[in-house]
Image 1 (cartoon, rainbow, N blue to C red):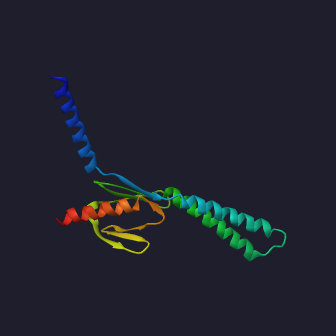
Image 2 (cartoon, rainbow, N blue to C red):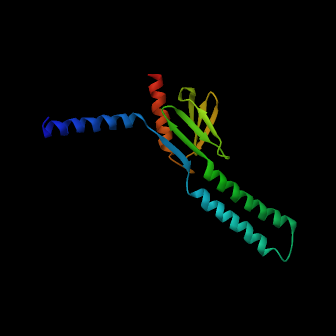
Image 3 (cartoon, one colour):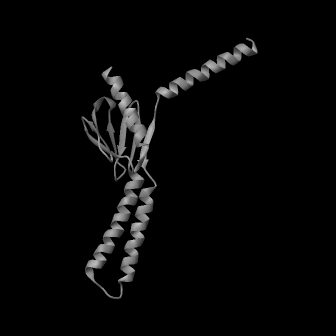
Length: 153
C-alpha cells in the first residue's frame, strides 16, 4: 500500500469516527457561576447582620439573619448538586441532594416554553429548566427539539 493510499484510509477512518461522535451527542446542563456567588454573598450578609445587631438584641433581626444564611447554604448545595445529563440513551436529572432520576427520551411528550425557561413534560414527571441560571440549557432544548422532530417523522 502506497503512502497516499495509507493516508486516504486513515482520513476515511477519522471521518467515520467524527460522524459517529456527532450522532453520539452528550451534554450537561449545570448551574451557572451565579449560584456560588449569590450564596456566599447571602451567608456573609446574614453573618454581618447578626454581628451588627449583636449588642442590641432583637429576635426578629436574628431570624432574618438566619434566613439569609440558610438561603445561602441551600443555594450553594443546589448549585453544586443539580445537573442534567443527556444523550441518546436518555436523560438523567440530579436533584438537590444529588440523587439521580432517569428519564427515557421516548417518554418526552411535550416541551412548554416560558419566558424564563422551559418545562419538559415526560411520562415520569416534569423537568424544569431556567435559561438564565443554567449553563447548557439552550443546547439541551435544541437537542430535545431535534429528537421530537425525528420522533414525528
